[in-house]
Image (cartoon, rainbow, N blue to C red; front, side):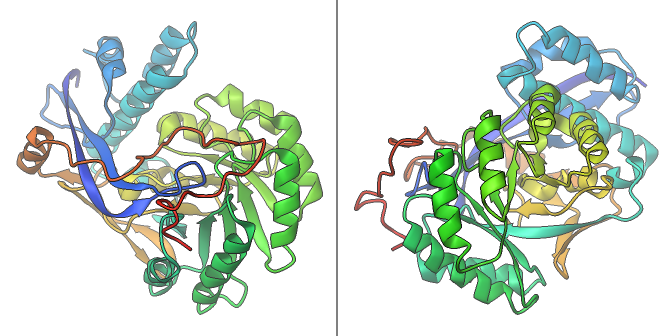
Length: 388
């Protein structure tokens, strides 16, 4: 079997609710994604996510190769990108092609990817994540109630601009999820908006009211001294890493004892994610996969012995895709469809790709870093105060 080609369809769609954080408190409902197919000479195709100009530049490295030799192909792509660093566009392309290769391998094996990766069961603990700063208190309660009704007992709140509001809203999440656990797993995320001292001061205040499991991305992703300082001065664990693109970046934080829970997602691809999880396992560190459309990274999470829980941001996949997984009793339950379990309605996707992009209704994520970050806190403008 040989890889013969690929195709990509990119489109934007309305998610039906605003998503935002401390850097974009007003948020936006517009999302964009790309569907990637890898083609073979035997008619078996992958259906995964990913796009960008980097695909065209890296695809010649794997064209004509047997897709089952994916670890060697991953190294081949990473070796070509090494001089400029496995970052940005190159990292995204490697991750997308690597995930497509794993999807192909599992489809060739006629089994779900979690089985190909060696997991004993296709089940991963879930936590609800609303990217919820734009939501009113009522909308916030409605969002988390959906997950509570599915048995979820863990949630993550966006914070950072108003400690009093953060404490009030954390109480809403706590009360809703407590139906499944008298001590719900509460996490918070400041999206790199604070300095280390700000983080210690604010989290210490929150911990007077709640038992917080982890605090995420509260200072800059590369600030190992600041991350370690925070970890040593609050009770909650420091979770970070989702915005890093290479194994080496993560290992520096691990070596400096600057991370308590190692986070990553589709940015590393399947191979990179498994490599990082195994390295964290050597240090007895838990890992957590961040949310991704269709929960496709749950296949990798299921095969990680030190995986804690995975972020779930949407209860459905992007338009034009169906997925073989669902939330049940607080877990992502993966089906038995071959590969990652995606099925694409290509005709529908072509319609979406050809349609004009929905009009912007705010600042789409990921947004620019907000004014005052790391220096002083800038309250939301009147136009942004939809969650007061």
